[in-house]
Image (tube, rainbow, N blue to C red):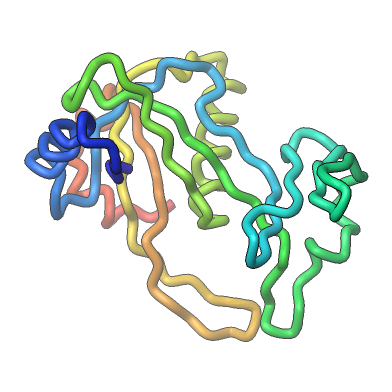
Length: 182
């Protein structure tokens, strides 16, 4: 979250490290009803060569003549799994929020590439919207260790992003969240 390269951002990085270094959760504030944007992106050696918002069926693909619009669908050859279970085109998410404990006038963007993390956040936000709840408010964003199996049956331990609204975690502290199962 707090990778910075500009020298005037260094004070924010130092404050971030002071508050959160070594921790598995951060306190954030969501200020928008649509804090998570997702898209499909395909990369090669030169960077992104095709991208499409997950809410659209039109992608922008890089060609030798520049960028052109192409159809984007789940049937696209690049979104199909290869023998190793990988896709050339994957869903990524951009999560925007504030960290008032670091600074009050800076929007932070978190790039999320983990499919379970993206799904977990999307499901949480959809549930709140179905309930008629505003997404604006204070939250704890945390990492939850989970055992994940791939398509071959191999299991791995991964850290998955999860979120809880500050008013919802008054009955337990964030360190005990890791022990809850979804």
